[in-house]
Length: 323
Image 1 (cartoon, helix red, strand yellow):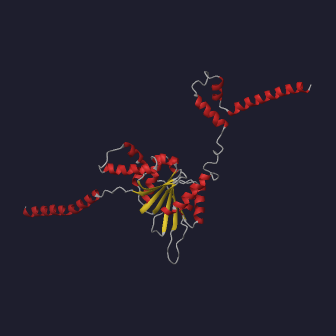
Image 2: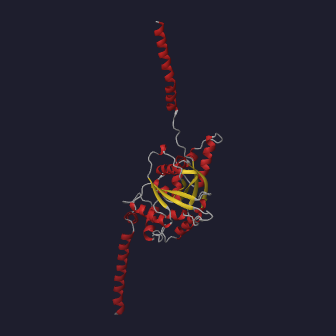
Image 3: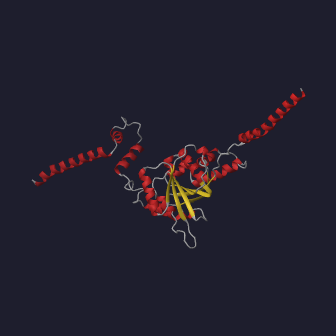
């Protein structure tokens, strides 16, 4: 009979399906999760049900956009590039025919294109701005150096590389950089201490009207001390605190610590919905005063020592005559 033959076949297919589901479950779910389902009071007693549920959800329902976040396929990536290209050039120092820029520990040379002015100086009128030189502060690999030099040729910009200075307390201020750049992701990659050391070197190289552009994402702001608007508020509070107008606030002191150690002062913050924030900073670096008191003292002693010896000789001669 046909139905009698079809019954066992359905049963065998059901068994195969069940076996396949069990095998798939073993491969896809964490071992601890399975133990918690099969034997709740056994090996995984300390594991909470919420954690098991989250692990199961992550295993069965992975984020389909996890691999494209931050890449060129991510729509948010292009929003960030448009924001930087439209705003960084507007923050360059005004009234300058030629500009020298220096970037702190870059991973790529994208920001060179963001800072290169669209309008070159007119040969007849002299109007316009030219990015004369683009410097890289910190160690770079041979591939990175090649890429920077190649990109600089595209924009007719001179490429330069400066070594990282370990003794940041005795830096010689060069005063030859008009704009310093810290790209998004750099603060989180370097950490607070190394970032402060790099910011000091940027501040020491700035001209009088120079500035540093901090491009930050959420992770960068956490390293710097918080949202840049809050850091600027804490910075202003600390200045009023030092003048005696406000009481001490340890929390605000901690928020302003990284930029204060980096010899920078926030003067403007520009935030965008793309997830990036630009902080415009002025340099506050002042080299240590060289003590010239000892040299002046030696000169004074040398000047007064001559006449004293002469007077002693005269006295000896006079005493000899008298005898």
